Length: 76
Image 1: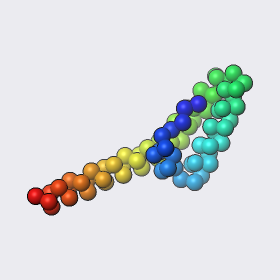
Image 2 (image 1 turned 120 degrees about the horizontal axis):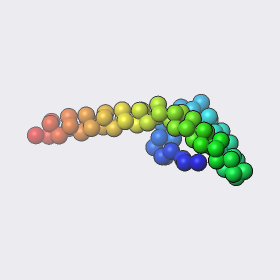
Image 3 (image 1 turned 135 degrees about the horizontal axis):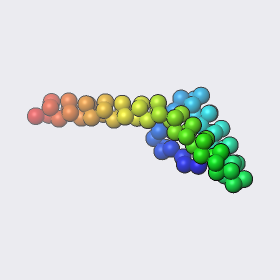
């Protein structure tokens, strides 16, 4: 099972994080049982689950870029 980045995990809401952790636990169990076919399905579900947090991270980045641009404009 592939973990998402710490930055993305930090932007998951509580219910999303709980579901993420539960899916990861089940996925690790399935991998230990050599059930990679089922673990693959769980990984796809995790990938869908983290999409909103990835969008929140992108938005934070865009906001930071906007503030930086504004700061540099004021500095001139």
